[in-house]
Length: 327
Image (spheres, rainbow, N blue to C red):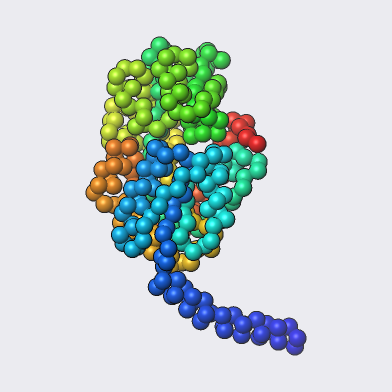
């Protein structure tokens, strides 16, 4: 009898709260946004995360009737800006421009991560971007197969550079090492320009990073491109094979999307998703994406989160196999 009474009281309480919840959601939808919207970019200005944030902000601001401000908060592999958004009020006024490293790679890299990527409210995916694996022209290979054969025949002879331990280029080449059975040695730098510059000068033999930053050097003959990380060749560089043509199933694209603090009201999530989706599909943004070697990634908020869950597990396996850890 007592259990039935407790259950009855709980049901009555839930029923009384339901109209209030619905009213609150309606009020949030009707009154939102009530302040400027900030998109936090957890990296320095000038990179693709920054470009995407500003492109989206410029497009959605008129539709939402509020300025959209881009706030660069770099540090700790994106962890500082990400933690800031994780602690922000769940009112839809503070958002994060997240990407593969922040949302799927960092949980397996850092032992003291100050945010939970899967606790974010997933709003809208933005773009998928290819990386290109390049070598100095002095390396006697001209294809992915030749690189794999050469690396296996000459253990310890090939080094690869990155913009820093745990960065995109490091993880990309670590994944390539795992997939191909090679053991090229990592040489970390403080930034992509230095990383690429030392491959051009021959101090390091290879790197694997954003295609747009590498293509001018490839076309000038300063670097030799061996493969792109997407399953298909790039529309802007059809002459470069996909690595998957040699290693079936290989897909190491970088991806980007907008998330917010945990618990964002569903009406806010859906409104943001709709406006961001329209922004990304606009002709001028599409042209900008193409010039950066990127393509629009268009799935629902739930599909976005499901993808990140799967990617987190995939990168955990790669990072464990490559024995990478950052404290």
